[in-house]
Image 1 (cartoon, rainbow, N blue to C red):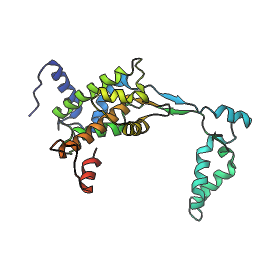
Image 2: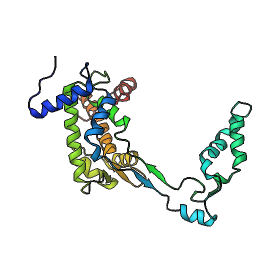
Image 3: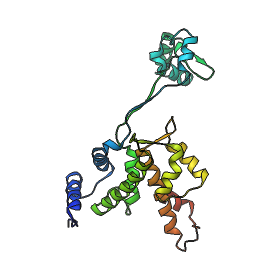
Image 4: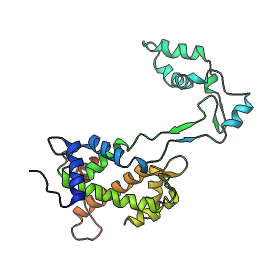
Length: 256
């Protein structure tokens, strides 16, 4: 039986849900990604490029980029894999690569790289599959890999709350917040964590420039919420103590 919408907003939400879910009236992580990518595309960060600070000086010292730099990735692979491929059909591939660019693409100097691409690009391809999978897992009590309408609606309510918190610390609407704002952002979301946990989260979800994107912030919040829920299910006396066997802990957390 189809769920009953409570008001005009729910009716619109149900219509959207039906259009994506199909006959089974459930959405998996791929269908959730389609919804989020479409409805929250303006909240995601734009494509960002990072240039190593010492790249220009290194290449100036060497008289410009190293020759054969276009094949740098393959030459590095040849150095790593070549010794293990001797006597196999792959030996000729790696030996030819070294002969074409004998060491040039892999020249190094203390503190940096020569001949490697000077710019690292962080592209925006919508919400990551990992965060979509984790969102489904957070609400998916029966571990079916899919969400019904009520679970889907509850998830969107959580996302809306986290989005509102994120925007408080991203006033310029860049889609990213500074890592040092993570503590306050999580506090605003209701999660009060110690410095060691916050430091681990900043390293886990931060980018090269110390920023945390919107979807990474969601992933962070989802993981915290999921682990707290798992713990509280076992901590029935609210003593901040729970006991799990290894198998139980793996079973509870592996799906998240």
